[in-house]
Image (cartoon, rainbow, N blue to C red; front, side, top):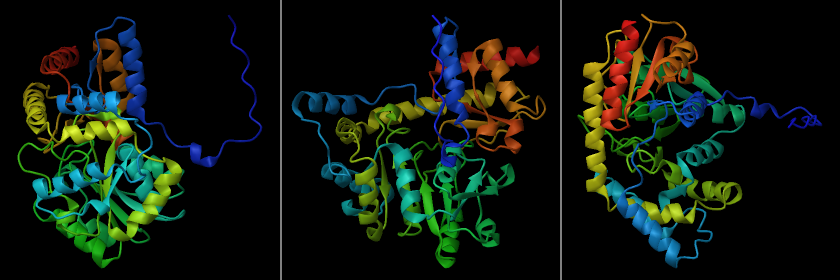
Length: 389
């Protein structure tokens, strides 16, 4: 059957649609297509747990499906979930946060959109670490805000410094992510406080991406709220709580921002998904199960750091998350072609570094080790064999 001709568009598309793709999702699509054709694919590209939501979360969802109308909730989220998240800050960090400051969102992605819209007018600029999560840049561009990149490096553990921010002019805020995607590194020592102090002194917004909190291996991550109560924190149930597809996250914001963000949330999203919020309440009762999952990540991390061949060199022992960011400059200057070849030749899907750093990422790749241990061992075997050839 012939496909119908595509109807011409009456006008050009809006400029805000001209953003780069999220490359890892394209890689996942190709990997899934190959798997559907019968190939044995090992997924090390997309950053998500291989495990389902914890049992207690799924049980809460089951009960809600049987007994709850599951209609709209308040735009800021279920009051009991906001209260539970606020209590979590006291339990985990020893920080007192009122439930009124919690905004439940449709994943951290909606959290970033709401925060950017509330804080940054068109024409504003936000400083971002590079390499970094690509959707920061693309969301900002779609909102007509300029992403101003701070080039980080291995010597500084891929984290921005107060000196970096001190040198910057013409920016309205700083976004910092610890643990970082793609590098897995964290702010250590006094660096987070130093960043908060320089933002306070220069009257800059500080947005802290904390969606990988809980996934640390040597030392616990600090919340920016320990350094500055006016920081805007973004977190999610996706990573540590193993609930990526449920699309539920949260913001912690200063009280003066609650109503402006609520107005935006009402109009953009109405409310987060009711079923996901019910499940999220149950996730807090699953810490033992979640810690066992994290122990599996730690085993995978140790395995890959030991088994990956020398050609994938200069990998820092990542502090948190479930990523390794590898320098492959001895093998290629085209990480996209390198990743495509690896998928085609040995069925291992990884993410080219250009997703996270359009320039220096040409000589880096990211490997996600959130998969089953046997799959990670097999991936290391395939990679070593392939590179020997």
